[in-house]
Image (tube, rainbow, N blue to C red; front, side, top):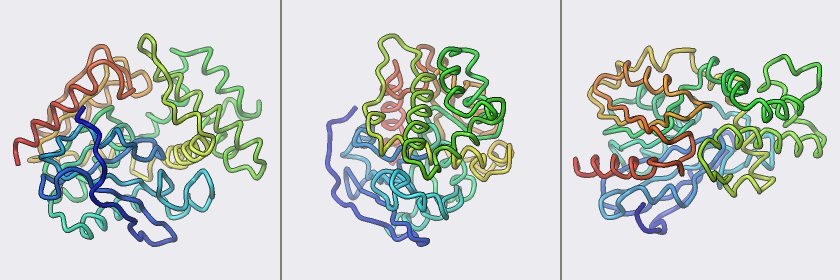
Length: 317
């Protein structure tokens, strides 16, 4: 990773519908434009997301998606953050921000949920994308949501039992995402708080596949937990408002856009087959599977591979 840097510009995009979207720019103002799309949905950007980019060669734009990070309203404070908050709203925000910043084309980097958003954006606006680097690839289909909230429990039976026990008994055989979303939107603060912790405990459990894995410290913040869990369940219960299979079906639109896909072989919550399917559907893409890594960006090989991919594209100018 490159040394820590501070933004040379930051502000808010008036996205409409009561949403103000935070953004910042880092690195070289005259450098190669790149946009960072964070995961979750609902994770928000961290200072560490500035550091895979060579600050002498990149003009890095980071954006906290609606309801997340420093954007307002925040889903951990106000349920209104979920209103007018869909994939299609986020795609419009990205274009509005690009126009506001005077950028013609930019590299798109996305991680986890951010890869779904990146693919959707690039397929809608291929002329605006110079390259893509996608880590921990997901397309947020209904099958993927069912797998990550239920099927993968076969590998984590004790954690899944705790996760399933967090919803009323009558709802334990139904979709976990629906049951948890209802609890997270409860008017009872104690119910919301417990559901957010149970949801985040599950998410932490299924990415802990390497020795000595430690949870991200962000999960210690109750506000983050509630906002994150609300955003994830809001998007997942709607399969990201994308027609099932449409990202693969329309991947031909990415022809001519160089792309590097990075995925952990041990990513049990997001099986490598998803990345493989995207790679096969995207003409000219490159897939790198890391044998010792899971879903966490801190897993072995993730950082080095990401930095090398971004360095390679920086050299293209």
